[in-house]
Length: 387
Image: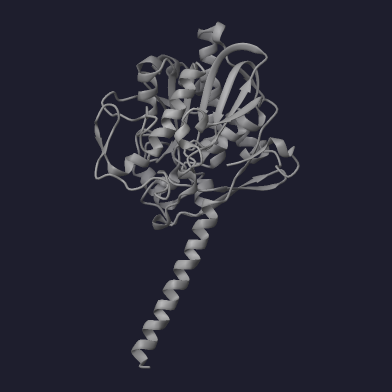
C-alpha cells in the first residue's frame, strides 16, 4: 500500500472517530433531562398535547404545571424557554415553580415551552452543551438549547415561511421559531402546533395575563424591557415605573409592532382576550463581537470586547466590569412578573392573582438563583418531573 493511501485511510479513520464522538455528545445532550421539583403550590399537571393533540409522542410535547389558590381569582400563564439559548427565562420560571404559593387565582407555568429547541444546540457558534447553577446542595445541571426547534423534530424548512393566518413572508428558519409561529394551528407544522396549544390553554382556561420570558443582546435596542401591545401597554408602563422606583433597575416599555406577525406579544393579544407581556433581560452571551462562548461568559456576562463597545456608547444597556450576571437577569424577570400581576390585581380585584414565596430582584442577586432550587434527590419522587 502506498504512503498516499495510508494517509487517506488515517484521515478517514480520524474523521469517522470525530464524527462519532460528536454524534454521541449531541445524542446525550438531546436526551439529557432536567429535573424540576414541583413546589408546594403545584396542584396538578398536564401536557401541552392535552391542548394540541398533534404534539403527543413528539419531542415538542412538554409539561404544564397548575398552581391553584384556595380562593378564586384571575389566571396568569408563564412561558419560558421559547428561545432555549436565553436560559434566564427557564431559571426564573423554575423559581416560581419550586417556591410559589398561590393564595388567590391560578398560576400556570410552562418551563420548557419549546422543548425541541431545548434539546437542540449551535455547535457552529461554539456553544457549550450544558451549564451549571450552584445551589445549597451542590449544582444543578441544565442543557443549553437553541433558538429554534431541532430539525430532527421538524423538517424540511420551506424556502420561505408563510405565516398563518396573515400570510406574511418570513425567513425559512422562522418555521422552527416559536416566537414567529403564533397564533398557530392544530394541523400546521410542529411549532405552530406548540403555539396553538398555548393559545388553547389561554382560551380554555380563561387566562387573564400571559408572560413570554426572553433575553436579548446588549447591542439590540429591544432589550432590558417589557414588550407590550396597545391593550397591555398601560399596565406594562406602570410595572416599569414601579420596579425602577422601588427596586432600582431599569426596564423600559417597547410597543409591539402591528406589522410584524407571528410574535407572542402581538398574536396573543389579537387572537384572545389575554393580555400579553414579553420580557427581555440583557444576555451578553448572544452578542456577536465577543470572546469565546464559554459557560463562564454565559453566567457572568463579562466580556472585554463588549466593555470597549460600552465605552464607545454602542450598547443599549449600561455595561461595566461587573458584566450582566445571571442572578441579575433572573431577579429582574421575577420582579417584573410579580409586579405586573400586582398591577393587574389592583386594576381588577375580582380577578386578582396573589402569589407569595417568590423572591424579588434584590433577594435573587443577594442569595443567588440556585438558593431557590430544591434537591431532586431528596424530594418526593412524585413531585420530580423530567423535561
